[in-house]
Length: 312
Image 1 (tube, rainbow, N blue to C red):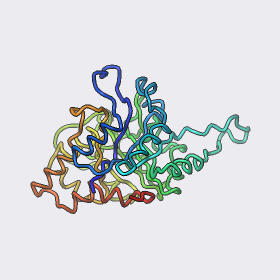
Image 2: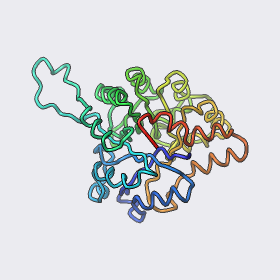
Image 3: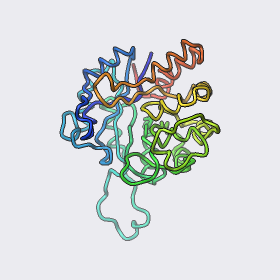
Image 4: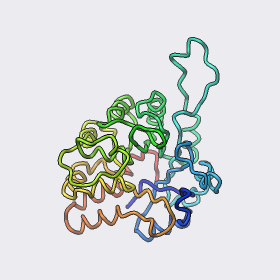
């Protein structure tokens, strides 16, 4: 079974790319059929303000509940995730003794409702907060208590961006992984994948670094040392990471065959907006550069193993 672990629906267009088409449930299913993908994990959008775009905000289905209710009609093809922002749950005014240690949000009402709606995970988390912010740790811990994996978008630190952020070396991610050891945590995006290589500059966590990988970075080290960390190869960031140095990429996919998840992160409904990840893996398989076992794990078996609540 082939599973795309990173799919969206809705209008994700920016003002400069209005010639492109939004993603509908119909053209999402059409893409899955065309590419030979059995199922896709649907990650709702428009949860955090940093990643919310005007066109999507005013286009149906824009709110998270509408997205999930619409997608439930395609339960044979779509695996539903809920989504949350770690800043949710304002508790009103604080008492003097609470100022330095404010109460933590109880996410169980959200998680219970998502589970009732058929959701088996949370993501993609895009709030622009430090990866080790106490609110992030609190939310991720509670997701683990509900057996819900969490997929997050990672960026470098800075204003005007979306996604949980970290410095070079991923020290905040390492702390989060240790503080939420029972939660399956799935990383994605430039701030995560730039760390496949060592000796990177901070600005490389916002782009797709090119060229051969001379020295491994913090990402391979964390994948080895933290059993709860997984890697989503979706979007240009993930594809660039595994293909920029083909030899290193093959070694990475082989070593971490139990920790890597196929994803695409297609953001538009047009065919020219589709992503090359599955074709690349199929070519590696046909050229005998990866084994059938590696291919099957990355394209579906790993997903089914970590989605404890999912019942096909």
